[in-house]
Amino acid sequence: MNVLKTAMVAVTLGAFLSSATAGAAHTLTDALINAYRNSAQLKSEQAALRGTDEGVAQAWAALRPSVNASATSGYSHSYNTGVNSRVSNLTLSLDLLVWDGGATELAVEAARLNVVAARENLVDTEQTVLLNAVIAFMDMRRDAQFLELAENNRSVIARQVQAARDRFEVGEVRRTDVSQAEARLAGALGTVALRQGTLEISREAYFVAIGKYPGVLQAPPPLPRIPNTVEAAKSIALRGHPSILRAQHGVKIAEINVYRAEAAMKPKISLSGSLSINPKAFSGDTAGLSIKGTAPIYQGGRLTSAYRQALALEEKSRSDLQLAGLLVAQNTHRFWAQLQIARASITARQKEVRASRVALRGIREEANLGARTTLDVLDAEREMVQAETNLVEARRNESVAVYSLLSAMGLLTVNHLQLGIKTYDANVNYNKVSTAPKPTNRAKLLDKIFTRAGKK
Image (cartoon, rainbow, N blue to C red; front, side):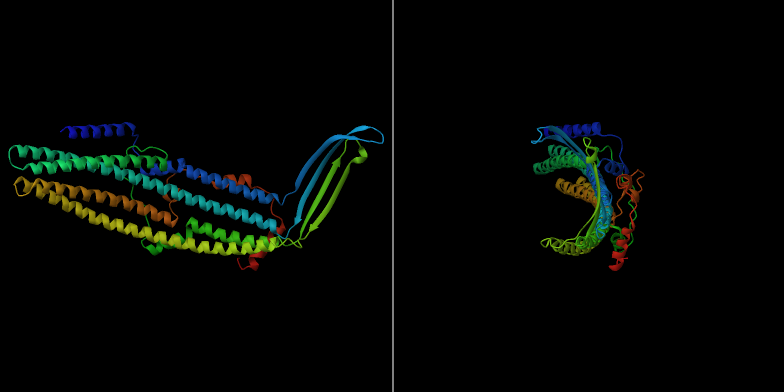
């Protein structure tokens, strides 16, 4: 009895602490919104995207004039006259790229495509964050239900122990029946402790995924709609999954880098101007304007190596695109199968729960008539608890499988789920930092290149 009392006090204290720390009721929608707003992973990816935006501004800078100023000041000594004089000079220089075979315009286009690819990476991260939130929410609800089932089972077995002891005192059962019941009670107490620990672990995982500790978790809303067939799901995934779109942009970037490697072998023409001012000597002011052309003749094989490297990376990007498609199709099929397994399991577990409850009632009645032992009743109760536990697990698996399938299709986003919150606008920072003069007619080189390559 002392063991039983200690266990009951522990359970009561745990319930009190849980209720004291719990906040208002939380829905799955609340969890998803909080996860999106609080995710450090998502904020990191947003910052990385802003850094990628700067690549466009830096690429554009090569098409703009470069103006530099330099100043010198010092003293000079003439050994002929013995006179010391102060020398000061201010020089302004300007450099402007006139023509480089289209390499700079190609660099701008590559930087833009890098931004587009980084945006797809941000969408993929958003899906990961939201899926982790769903899993954390479902795990928390499952483990809370597991603990409730374990506590109910402990209470039932405790009553069985007391009943066995009472029957033993009047000689209706043997001492072994009492010992068997007490052994089951000890096991039930261990299960309660296990479920409490597991729930606490899930609680911390919930905080990491969502950014807040859970309150009372409400039942999840109806599951999102999914396609009727796995083929339809795969079709959607292959058209719009962010990893595939990112790989497609990677192929375009690799193609442009091949053309950039070709352009690096062409001559370059630049314009330079300078103005030098000497405040101590009026006649010392000078101005100059020059045009310079350079052409690579021999670079030790560096340019041809860079070209071969660009070709190899282009081939790699095409293989990466093919691999991305295979993985997306595989994940879509895998989560579709997991969903079918979960739904079939729910149907089977529901039948198992109903049958185990009927069996338990019958065995209890037979035990009251002396046709069954205490152990038979305890076995039936354990089977019923296990069946209910399996049903809870199957329902959790169904929800996770549906949201995992949406993620595999590229649809697990704030907008698709219609969460009703403002999302990160990638255009705001891009428009702020990447402004530049309109491209010149030289940008038409891109169209000629892609037309020649059959890409348009």
